[in-house]
Each structure stands twice: as C-alpha cells, then as structure tokens.
Image 1 (cartoon, rainbow, N blue to C red):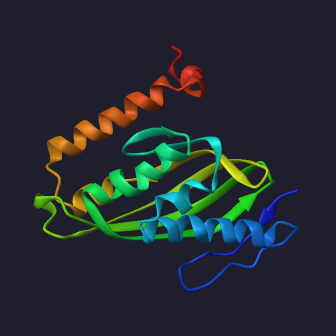
Image 2 (cartoon, rainbow, N blue to C red; image 1 turned 60 degrees about the vertical axis):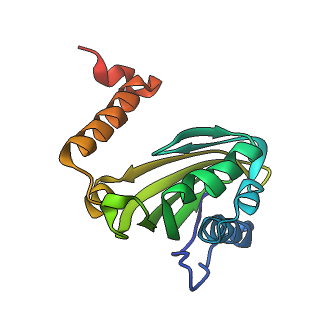
Image 3 (cartoon, rainbow, N blue to C red; image 1 turned 180 degrees about the vertical axis):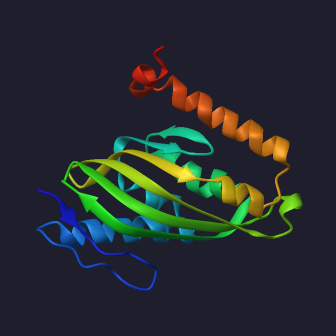
Length: 177
C-alpha cells in the first residue's frame, strides 16, 4: 500500500494517509532540519548502523559515523545556510521517494557568497523505520551556474556523473548495441 504525503516544507508538516503518516513526515522533517542545523549526529541516527548515503557530489558514506561526517565536515566545508525541503513523498514502507528543493550559500571564492539552488528526487530504502540506503537524482547544473563555475569545470563534473550512470548495472541494456 502506498502512502502519499503533501509537501513538507520548513514551516509546516504534511498530512499523510496511512498508519505511518507521522513517522514519514517526522523522519523527513528531521532529515532536513538536521542538515540545516549542522547536526550530523541527528542526521545519522535516521540511518541503520550499516546505512549508506550516496551523495550526488561526494559519493558514498557508509555507517553512522561516516554519514555524520558528511554533514558536519563535507557539507559545511564550502557552504553554509542550508535549506532543504521535501515535497510530495510517497512510500510503500520499504522505499520512500520525495521530490526536494535544496539550497546553500557557497563559501567558495568564485561564488562570492551566492546561493546555489537545485532540485532532485530522494530515493530511500527503509527497514524498521530507518534508512538503509539513500540515493538521489538531482539537477545540479543550476547550482554550478549559481556559484559561477567555469564551463570547463561544469563539463568535467557532468562527464563524471555520466560515467557513473553508465557504470550502473541497470544501464547495461541501454548501452547495448
């Protein structure tokens, strides 16, 4: 059975149908709040001990300690003032999908304090109310333009993302001649 929730923005909590309504809404709001509040420990607690967070920029972080490090160190190394909202989450209790909007102020010199913004879809595998695996599909190109990356740098990043996509097992059929 699918459960559908409304937008979960910073100012409000979504209404959801089904038994796990509050659990999903609470988990997603805690997820976003932990990033915004620079609280890697609270973020990592949403994951199983062996959970994995696959970040679109930084790669895979496995286990709660590494996931907390992603938030506390990697995210905040070159950015500040994060904003993250989840929209229209859908779950069957095992997999959770949610469209998101995400932004931060870049501290990279070339960005000159610009706010980088993008949207994506979060894909979470769940077990016993915890996240076992987080993946995302994100349209990061607008963020690269926002923070004034050179076209060559953007092309290099996009090429790396393309290579990673082609290396995934589910793409094998698409690459067949």
